[in-house]
Length: 332
Image (cartoon, rainbow, N blue to C red; front, side):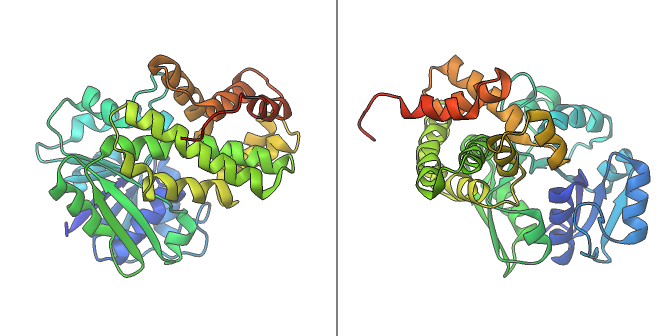
């Protein structure tokens, strides 16, 4: 297992991963983009905003200095919101060493372009860097509390995926490996869109039958897009696909589901965002997934309706009616 790790992004997920790595004996530096907040983390030894009461291990250091953090370890794990992903890559470029390796726990598509984040890494840093993505059904609070969790680490390099997995894997945190970096990314991005849909349906009072149908048909949509982009079908039946989809659609720890609930209860988009007070990745993912589906001629009816609710002012009840009015067809 690597002896050091730098994590960029001190939100709930980046902090939870930093705590997990440090508990496993890896000396870890956690970077936050606001130096003042980074000093608070270092002095208080906890992230009082996102994970209050969870004390940092002694080998977890907080820093607001980007250069210091990048140079701390050759292994860099990015955990910033997807809209900040490309900018973060550009910011770290001057400080990267020849042996620097990149991984990310960010879920989503590239802002505005709809590209996979692996494509952004290659565009910004050029080909040849070892890269990996970490995804799967994992709420930050439960990881920080040491509750049993399983995730997937995907890389084109099996040895690199195993290296990342070893940092986090222990008796309470299982880290599986995969070579399907495309499928893992698509699953992690699109599940947030379906979580909004499930939240809307529950907010409208449609019940468990509707939620189960949305999850099942939503998985079909994700698989269609993922396979079209080069992902493997088995990936979508695993932790980064079905596992993450079930988690995000059924538990109110999911900010995307809570956002959808608020919309279903009649709140405006802006009011729902203000209520969540954290990044709702499914909003931009709905736009990007919809545009990708249009570009590649992939049928994604649930995603399409979520897109129209969020960006074209479609009433959530009408969106459900539009789905129900679709013609009868074979399931497979």
